[in-house]
Length: 242
Image (cartoon, rainbow, N blue to C red):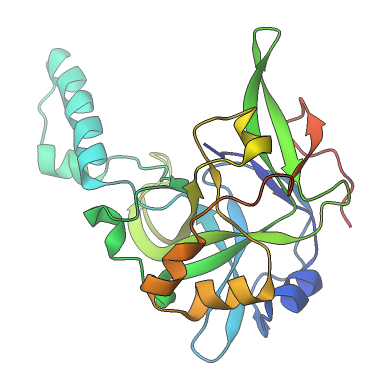
């Protein structure tokens, strides 16, 4: 599961590569370490043109996951002798979101299959954790040492929920990205999955515009040999922003 990536290019680079005419992110800083629930840039279809916006990483979790979490919290409160209003507890259950999406056929994800909910998630490198000398350490992957700009195949929506208990209920744009079987490089570190990566202008166009029957073919790993390990052990990609 990819829960850490970097995006170190500027807005102009994103605009040029992905054909985004409008930007709503201002002077975008270098982001060498993006974690779940962090805000990050995405490229999506706007009303008039493709646009760059900021969204929080983590799509809404399933109702079942929230129900299970709420039941556990209710049991703990009841064990302390407190009265529980379950419906209200469920409404306010914190949901940091689902960062990686694999089973696109589940009822929970089907509502966001259309182009209006697809996005490109710009990145320069991503990390999977490996166990080295008994410790979990990040292993960073990129196309090559220069960390060229590329994109995950993402989904986004506007959602009202409690992301963090201290924030309370908020409405925000949120996103996640698809995963698939890993290619050879990623499999050596993380054998279960890797992010779905789009590498060409044609793939960007298909993902943002095509019907789902065509776009779903992009849920596949990059070819073996397409990625390089560019750093190990850092919680931020040590490469300098370009």
